[in-house]
Image (tube, rainbow, N blue to C red; front, top):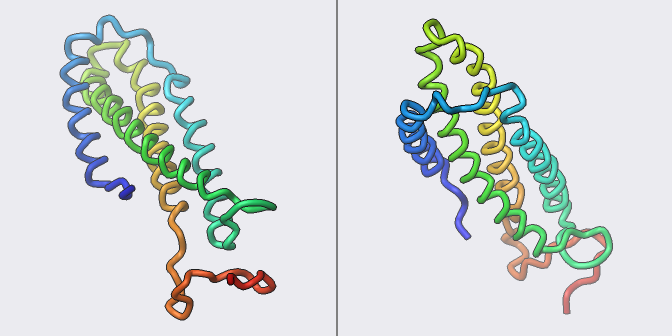
Length: 166
């Protein structure tokens, strides 16, 4: 599985923002009010992913990946990468949506009272979506295995006191 490229995410954000702006031009009159709470669920997911990324990074750095004991199972790390990649793409799509909404709202704040009221909610949602993308990229980065020691071609670097592989 290859790492998610930030340029691909950026292109997704830009394309989604353009489509979102066109949709908002036609559909804004039917939007429900955008409150501060609109995008906060993304912040909760971002916080959980960032915390998990810190935990995984600590385990990888300490060489505690494997089965049993206080080790993190390799399948959990692989699943974390999958979750991170999916979250990065979803975050990019949602960020593009909210940028498109903001592109509609910001120039109309003076003429539409509802646009001024909705701007704060859209800004919070966009920031939370950006936080999700950042947390997902952090989690993905945290799942990378450390570089292998050139003195240990078998990759059997363990902690002192570990049994040597046979």
